[in-house]
Length: 465
Ligand SMILES: NC(=O)C1=CN([C@@H]2O[C@H](COP(=O)(O)OP(=O)(O)OC[C@H]3O[C@@H](n4cnc5c(N)ncnc54)[C@H](O)[C@@H]3O)[C@@H](O)[C@H]2O)[C@H](O)CC1
Ligand SMILES: [K+]
Image (cartoon, rainbow, N blue to C red; front, side, top):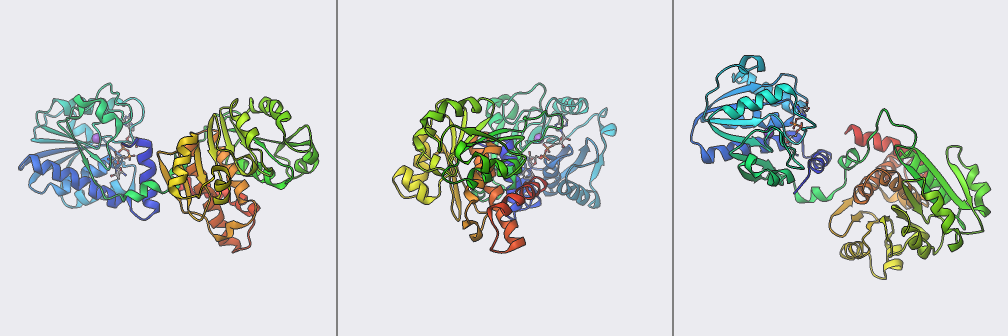
């Protein structure tokens, strides 16, 4: 099964990897027409169209129903996407009969087949009044009723509805939507039509992952877009600073950097936007756990371990008392008690889990440690033990020191507002893309700071894709 949000991300990622929406729409619409033709041999079809891609599918289906007398019933003629517009223009040029809402809403409609292309997975909130009227009207028609992707009015994820199109047949695309099985009485027979999305595309991260995990609220108050606590440092100083800067670049509202007092002066001097605080002592020990937890209370997520050596046991203790943790470098451990993202490279994976970093092993360890593992490499592996994704952004220039610290920070920012797996997928994609942008501008000799500078651009690219 696939949720509407996952389907939206997949659709975006298909485009990114070269499979256009127009291609998918053609396959979707044709599949609907074929299912109709299997059941009904000729006659008249009333095609009802909203303004999104669900309507685009309906226009394609209309074109493939050659044996039928087809009429198009519109809600309005301002379509939301280029693909839907294109398919509508084809019908107009081909001389199909088109009626506007005001022309048909009070008219008696007689036909053998009704196609419902009003609303698909893009439906949000309560039905607007004109859509309610349209659905009531469609339900009154005595004909064979076919819902495209989902019956209009039905919530594709929860199966809830107030008023919905009552279908004899629902032709859904790629994979079933959870709501279809919770509202059987509304959906009729459910057919899952393949629209040509390669299975592997579901396992690739892309801009779609970023789109569904990055949201801005124009009325937000300070902190609402994420509060990240970065804890690390000593013997290394720069590492946790890079993490903190990366968390800001990825959109966190508040980033606090917590380091041992021995390196506080230097760590605090790097950048004015980072709030730097000190822990007692030369390096992080068990004695600091209570202090760390006190700071953690005011943050959504703790990112722990950058610039430290061998602090796995402390990480485990912290994980018993916080909600979310990202572990990297010296903070890595196989024992975590809260929702967690672990970001080892192959060597660190072997050190922590005692086995080679094969895809199977990574999946297995994610499952037994109940954490999301993000294995950094030429092709990153992200898994929670059930789901798995690969990330292919990034380049050979990213072997430079500090890019791992940057990834931990970006994970912190996304994790503050999202579940672990979703956050890890977006973060891997964004950091790799930022690295690719840095490579484009500076060739091989870019540094972790250049990657941070490119993070906002990588996010912007993804959101606008
Ligand atoms: N990858 C795929 O699965 C493909 C799916 N296709 C089809 O596209 C739809 C989803 O398309 P989308 O454009 O995102 O949304 P909709 O067509 O569902 O319509 C959204 C449109 O409707 C308006 N609207 C939203 N909520 C309401 C409401 N409560 N009341 C009234 N109007 C509402 C709003 O204006 C939106 O703009 C998917 O289901 C498939 O059928 C593509 O063919 C490509 C491949
Ligand atoms: K529909």
